[in-house]
Image (cartoon, rainbow, N blue to C red; front, side, top):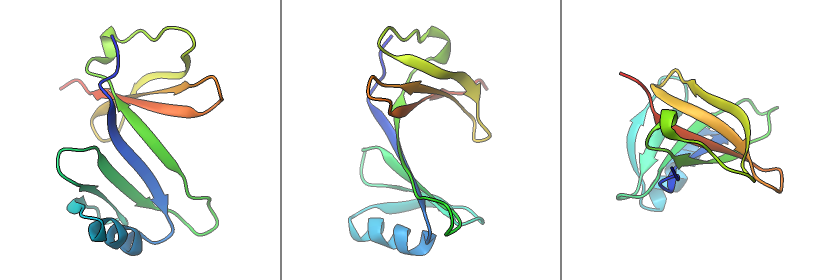
Amino acid sequence: MATEGIEAVFLTTHNWGKAAKFFQSLGYELEFSTDHNSGQLRNGDGPYVFISEIPEDQETQTQIVLKVPDADAFRPDSPVEVVTPFEDTHYGTKEMTVRDPDGRLWNLQAPGKN
C-alpha cells in the first residue's frame, strides 16, 4: 500500500497570530483555533496547515505529513526506515515516523480507530 500524497503541513511558530495572518493573506481560511495558540487553516481542497506556537527559546520547525489510508495495511519497503511505528495520537489519528535516505524525518498519518 502506498501513501495518498500530502495530508498536511505542521508548523511551529513564535507568534500564532502573525503566522495565521500570514497564511490568511495568502488565501487560507481558518478552520479552527484552539485556546492554546494553535489552529488549522486550509486553502481549497489542498493539504491543511496546522500551526502551533512554541516558546522563543525553541527552534521553529516544519513537518510534512503524508496520508496513509489504513495503518494496519501499510508495510513500507526499503529504503524507508521506520523510526516509530504507528501510534495513536491525542487528536484521533495514528502516526508513524520514517526516515528517508538523506536522514530527513517524515510523518505518516492514518485514520484512528473509532
